[in-house]
Length: 408
Image (cartoon, rainbow, N blue to C red; front, side, top):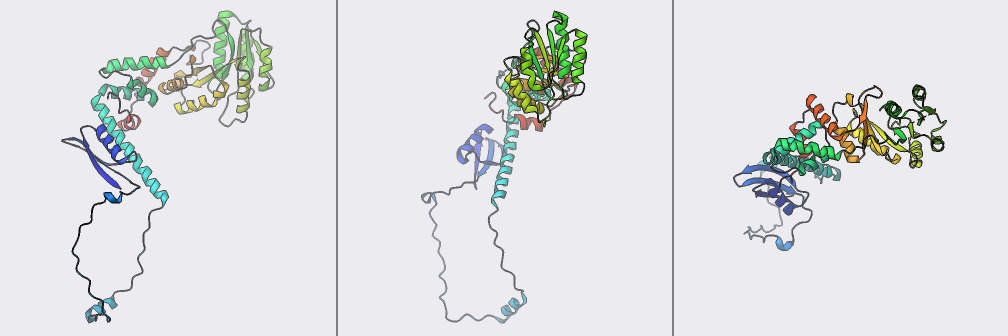
């Protein structure tokens, strides 16, 4: 283990010096403020020893000459013999070998984790001191539920001299620009739309709202409903009842694989809305249904229905699983049940999935409206404020401790 001490005016310069001396695997042992700046002590496990030429020359030491060996051993005093007899004979000492490789690796991982935690704390403290508006903006974005990479990207683009009001305005405008929306994409020309998604996100209700909006504007003569959801009890009956209420044609294929052939028979309809079965994580038919949707991608457009009251990590998994169906847009439901919107909007921004409609209730069709990016960002801000969301310092250090280059 090689240990060095580095003193520099700033933490960043001290860490750079340690990295040059010890490499990327250096471990911070201690850090403190001094009159000269920041003093950091670090160590690293140096695999290769120094060259022989670099070793210091040995210092000559005068040693007493060894006594000349004698043919007979020196006599032992009686007192010493008695003392030796009184001491019990001890077992041979155990020789401790080097620790197992697994334990060494675990210790290195622990040291690395401690190093990263200390660096994050130092970096966050430095950012809070230098650019308080940037740090406060990161706090507010975290309270909204905005993903870390998006929050960092926005803060990096923020001017250094911006106050908190300007920082907020810049951030909310940037979020609205990152969120892509389609508007009422099929309101005038219609299309063939398949509503896909997991179980219970509101696919059938969303389809009914879109169908009623179309019927109110254009009538039901050019409207066809396709009920392919044979898994949920009563799903096909719901579409039959809706078609009877609107005066629209309803088609129920025997198998999901019959969908491409059925679409060829519906060419006379301007608007065709397809209700698909909900897909659970262990649904054995999920892959085959995705293959059917992908095979007729030229005949229809898939809309991924997402629930706003679902955690961001679960939404990311849903987007990944349904990617083979090539969805052209997303529809966000249950806004009225969501305690936070930043996570849902972050998933849409990161996946670059365009948002067509949002739904926030069961009323048909009043509770469905075209997506507006700035309205959704404003609502995310209001939800964070009304719910009293807060982010503690420890979370902020771990999440944004790497934002050391902002303003430097």
